[in-house]
Length: 418
Image (cartoon, helix red, strand yellow):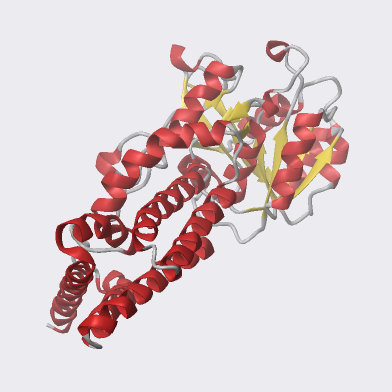
């Protein structure tokens, strides 16, 4: 079968079966980074392009109902089917269906490669002792728990099912139909560093297995980009806090808006002349925003920190304006101009970012400024030189960062012209 992106819409069918290894529970509701396993499985399908998800489950315990409610609040169209026939009826005849076996988690890149095929396909693992828990296909491969097919195959399998296991029967039909086998451990595309293999699929049979998945999820939050403040200060603060807030099921939106509230409090303190309190609160708000961003990265979601981040930056600009007004009262209107250079330089850098990306300009150096980096520097600069010279130093730093990015874009533009 040739590879290629199918024009047909994608849906997902997630099996959630009662298992003897879970006692009276389901693998689907095993806790995972503050949520449940099925929320992660649904997220994998959603990011692969699934327009809606059907969960095949005989009974719906409270934990599963709560997980599905959270997914619906996040905007996912998700349904519950109590039987195979009911599940099949919920798919449109023109949809391709991504099958997710009970309790199985694979790398997102592997799932993406699977759905980016024409015709039926499945994820395969080599038949080794390390993968003995997965169902054997033949003497060479085992099934990694993910497959894609059309609705017609679902209907035909449901009609012939009898007492057989639905997922296993579908697997046999896929194998008999010479479905394309996609390696579940293949390198993550040409952009991967050194063609490193993907994390292996995992069957979540208990807390030990979900802990391995959780470690992989938390690695997403180890940001390898940004300036010195993002890579070092925020990582130093957020990394220890991240597992703690996630295991307590704290929503990243609450963390993001909490950070924004701290920044607004800083404005109130500055309005009453308490600038030291304001300058000390703003870095804490920056750290809270970084924590919220990392929580979103764990689940691969759109950042919930954007709008709260705007509130934080506007609050920081308001504190800077109030401080400039105080210094201008004794030092002249020129301090207004110097203070205005800070947000102007940051706005200029933001405007240059898409241009630099389009021209493939040199990467942003680690030393360059950002709003959060300036907030962290402000208290130290104030101790060293007082309020007035702290404003001047921040303006010089922000201006130098803008000039560096402008130079990089200008150089790339000239190279393109040549």
